[in-house]
Length: 634
Image (tube, rainbow, N blue to C red; front, side):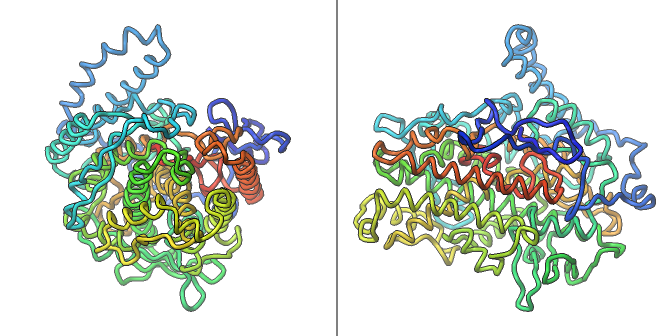
């Protein structure tokens, strides 16, 4: 894990090593370090303890545990755990990998016993806890050649129903070869499983904070597969400073727009139109910030305004942030990153000639992509799957959400998106996410330009490239255009269009996917936000809005899935990436790219330390090249 030092903290560890291969370029300076413990808080995320009265209200269950209900236990999943125990126990003393597998199996058993939501408890036997500690190294992946197994385009039943047309994505290729027959069997199993269990209800026993943190510490965190750090027991996530931090650096930063009057807003109010299931509260909210991004002007939720210090402010902020978690996971992460970008693009790239320069360039950035998209298909985006179960929407509303979020897709660089939203050119102090996102986009732009100068030196070279033209024609043909006013073009007329596509794809599979996939930072704080909102007793009682134990355990398991090891974007040896390119591509192209990534890492690290920001693995700004993964591999 990457760790960062803070003033007064002597316990440090280098941010590179054999486990992540992120050593600095030769002769490029000393090890940088990161904060080990969540002990220091400074601007803009101040440590503001809860006052005694509020703390008592918020954690009134701290001395009285709410026992689980026998009816919450998935006895089938628990029975399977018991049956599988002899597969690990006798052999754990002789093999390190089996010992790790045994530990993962015990975690699964404990989660089942504590009332893990039944669908998640059973599916965890397929998407195994045991496999969460597996390593994924870039060097183990294939370089394109003719003899590799080829994928098959397979219809996605759920998205085909939602879009009203046949939506296809490739499955079964060389990254994680599973035969089409087995894919069909796994797909059929999850289709049955998703229908076998009703969507979870909102009610049920709840965790109190200490019980929840202790559970994570004794399970996932001990196992080393959880990207999150417990915050101080009395840390208040509902201060004005914490709300601003979330909107300039956390999930809310991706939804920021400049208002016509010069102020700013993170607007998620469109979610107020979508109905939710009984027992859940509606999503929504729009947080308005001042022109200098230093003050919360108001939070508008369902037509009513709230401000810091109001009796219902804490509950209203919880609803707003939970909406942001839902929006990020559903749109930016699952629908856009996994399907409309990675799934469709990887499908078409792997249908190109293995020596085409576009396919070769994109190869390291698409490792595991089709196998992971298949996993998202059966477990995340489907009827009765994770988005339906862990959210509060009705079945019909989730379909409407998917169509609405598809309409927001655009093929533009992230810098172009920031300009369109009026968020470009801001300082790191004011808007850390956007500032460093622009810098990362610029690094990608120079890298792509250097590569393109070798194979597409002119616009004419792009227009005459049959492989490139066929790629865009197929992508446009496969795309759900009836729900998207800005689909990809059916022709690539210039170097600029090709570069825009390549740039945004790299940003999506690295920064966008990681920012939205690392839900630990949103879910670990316990009371900052969740994937759904329990109706509870109203906004004045935040504790009553917390999810049930069953739903929280299931969501933490899903979060642990996103913490699996994956190859980093930055590589100390540029040949790790360069080996995927054609032999006539100069090594200097990749060497310069890695050097610029290292410089960006240093700049981000300096910003973090100089501002005293509490940094943890994958903590905002989640744009550090040593933390970013090189592709959608989890």
